[in-house]
Image 1 (spheres, rainbow, N blue to C red):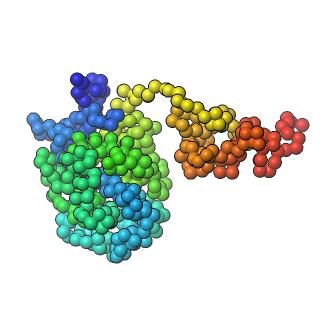
Image 2: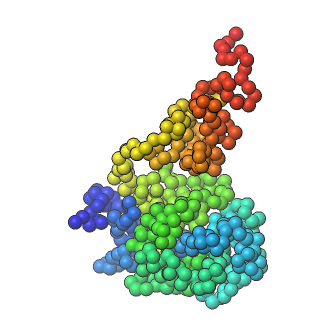
Image 3: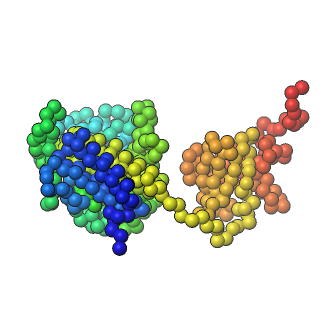
Length: 461
C-alpha cells in the first residue's frame, strides 16, 4: 500500500523539503514544521530543527494564534444555522451591556465593527489573562475607533466578544463548546486550549545575534477565542480539508463557502495587496492564485493554514519563534510547488443524464445591445453566461422555480435570468435584471428601451 509520503513524486517531495529547509535557516527558527493537503488529506509533511536528533513530527503541538479565530467563527456560524441568531443581529440583542451593542454579529466576524485592534495595555499576548477578567477590560473606555461597518479594521477584542456570545447562547465555556461541537467531531484530538505534550517551546531570537531566549506562556483569559489554541500540522491538515468541503456534523459546505466569501470593505492598500477578509478567514491573491485560510502569531510562535481551492491543495506551516520566517509566503510556496509539479487531474467529462428541451432552447449566442455572449448548459445543471470577447460580466445561474434562473456570482449574483416566450412557446428574449438579451443585436420586435433606429444598420453616408 502506498503511504501518504509516497503519494507525491520524489522531485516534488525534495522541492518541498528544500523550501522549508531554506525557510528555517534564513528565518532562524528553532524549529519549523509543515504539511501539504491534497484532495482532502495530508500527502506530505516535513520538519527542520536546530536541535540535533529531535525532529518534530505532525503530532507535536505549536501555538497557532489567530487561526483560533477561524474555529470561533465556525461556532458562530453553527449558532446561525440552528436559528439561534442572525448574522445581522446587533450584539446587544444577545449579549447586552457591552457598550458596543450596535455592532452586528457579522461586523465582528468580518472585522468591520470599528473596534480597536488591541486591548488597552499592557500587551495582552504577553501578560496573564487574569489582568483582563471581563469584556470591559478588553474593550476599554474607547472601544470604537472607526464608524461601525465602514471599513475593515482587524480587531482581536472583537473575537473575544464573539467567544462571549457563544458562551451566552450555549450556556457553557467557549473551550467546552469548541471541543464538543468542532474538535471531537472532526477528530482534532491534538488541538487544545492548553499545551499537551509533546509540544514546542516558544522562543524569541535576537535580531542581531544567533542567540535566543524563551517567551512567557500565558493563558489569555477572555481573549482566548482570539488566539489561545495549540495544534499540530496533522490536526490543521484535517481542519483545512473541512474548510474546503464542509462536514454536515459541524458545518455545511454552503456555510463554509460563506465563510470564504469576502465580507469586509477593503482598504485601498488591501486591494493593491490582493487581501480580503471573509467570516473568520483571510483571502489573498498571489501570483494568479486565490488563497484562503488564516495566519497566526503569539510571542514565541508563527502559524499559517492556507489553501488554493482551484488546485485542491493546501498547506500548514508552524514555527516556534516570535519573528523570522514568513509563514504565509512559505505555505503559498508549498501549494505552488505541488500544484505546478503535479497539477490537479480533472474528472472526466460526462454528459447530462437528461436534457430539458425548454432549457436547450436557451443555450447558444445572445446579444445585449452589441455585446456578444454565450449561454451554456453544463453537466451540473447550471447555465453559464460568458462574454464571447473574454472580457465582461459573467455568471453561473441555478434554476429557481418554474422557469427563472438565479445568478450565483459576480455582477449578476442574486439577479434573476428570466426567459420570455412568445405565444407559440419559442423564446423571444432573456430578461436579466431589466437587461434584454436577444438572438441578434438590437433584434427587431424585441422590447429594447429607446427603440431601434428606423433606418436600421447602415454604413457611412
